[in-house]
Length: 212
Ligand SMILES: NC(=O)c1ccc[n+]([C@@H]2O[C@H](COP(=O)([O-])OP(=O)(O)OC[C@H]3O[C@@H](n4cnc5c(N)ncnc54)[C@H](OP(=O)(O)O)[C@@H]3O)[C@@H](O)[C@H]2O)c1
Image (cartoon, rainbow, N blue to C red):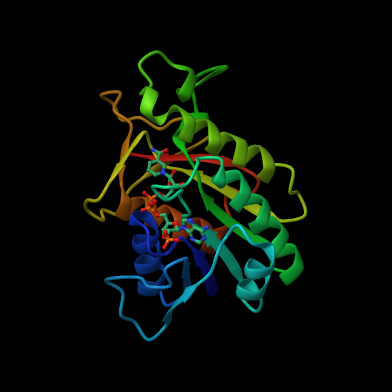
C-alpha cells in the first residue's frame, strides 16, 4: 500500500511510519518541517506540507491508497487546530479521490461508563482538557464524512514510548483498561493497531479505543 502519513515526524507518527515500512508498505511522511528523524528506508519519503491547507493535502494525497494521521498541535498552536486539520484533510482527500483515512485521535471522548466520557470524569487533568475536547470536536467533523472510509483510532489514557509486543485490545467507543483498571499502551503497539486497521479496515466508521 502507498500511504500518506500526516504528522510522520511526531512521537506516534514516527512509530507508525516504522511499523508500516516493516510491513512492506511505502510511506510518504508529512510534517511542516519536512524532516523525520530516525527513519532511513528506501520506501520512505519525508516531505514538507501544512495539514491545515486542503490544496496541499489534495496534492500530497494524490496517487496514494490511503491517508493516515498522527497530527498533533505544535507547542505554539491552539488545540482547535486539530479540527482545522481534520476539515482540511477531509476536503483534501475528496479532491484527490482518496477514500481511506485512519486518524490518531484522543482518549477523552471514549466512554468509561455508559454515557460518561473520560474527559468528563473527576480527576481528568485540567491541563489536558482543552486538547481532549478539541480532539472530540475533530471527531464530530469526521463522523459526518460518510463519503470517506474512516476510522478514528484513540490510544489508551496513557501512551508512551515502550516495547512492541504486538498485543493490544480494542473497544468500540470505550476506553480500554487492563485488569488493574489501568488504561495504557506503548506507542509501538498503538502503531501495530494503526497498521492493522489500515490493512484490514475492521473498524470502519468507528471511534475505536486501543489499549492493553
Ligand atoms: N491518550 C491520548 O488520548 C493521547 C496521548 C498522546 C497523544 N494523543 C494524540 O495523538 C496525536 C499525536 O500525538 P504525538 O504526541 O505523536 O504528537 P507530536 O509528537 O506533537 O507530533 C505531531 C506531528 O504533527 C505534525 N504537525 C503539526 N501540525 C501540522 C500541520 N499543520 N501540518 C503538518 N504537520 C503538522 C508535527 O510536525 P511539524 O511540527 O513539523 O509540523 C508532528 O509530526 C495527537 O493528536 C495527540 O493529541 C492522544
